[in-house]
Length: 266
Image 1 (spheres, rainbow, N blue to C red):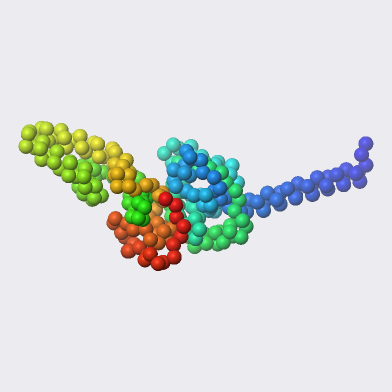
Image 2 (cartoon, helix red, strand yellow; image 1 turned 120 degrees about the horizontal axis):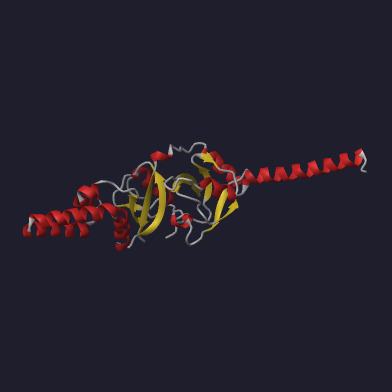
């Protein structure tokens, strides 16, 4: 039978060991996760995140957990639900919408970097998630950018040619107008049939058509952001790359070539 003194010493040692481990876990959890590997089929890669991007917050709440905690936080029961994730890239913060875990590999950022980002996040405004919409940014080698919302609108379901004109998709617009003109000359019923078919086609495929048209003009997907307006989406792009230019600019002209540039990926 063990003496009370021995039992007391053993309990004290066990408690001391547990407290040390708890303090280590607490210190580790106080940091922020940073991407250090992207899978080719991961959501992080699809959202055009980069190695070195830091996970700052989930749905407006600062995130200090580990990789398992992040996967759990982003695993949504509703298949149509989205989570808002705040990302820090260099000195720029922006948001992305995701329907599940981002994937990829993570490491803990240095405490000094995590502290700087946490302080910067205190002044970063995050609104209700339903105020955001996903924007995709396609960019050419000369930094010309095409920014469009990934949420379908009703306009192409009703006026396909007007939607094509609004987005300056010239070649398909001229083809549609020519088809309308030829059909109405042949027979009004043929015109009605072609009009309905084009409404359905452009309405259902509008996001894919925008992507395809960008690829046709040598644009590639560069960035995905969640923003409250296209103006805010363009402002985020301009912060990441001061020299990027837009077909429909809401943020003025780009910086001159001699201005300092951030390193950007194609």
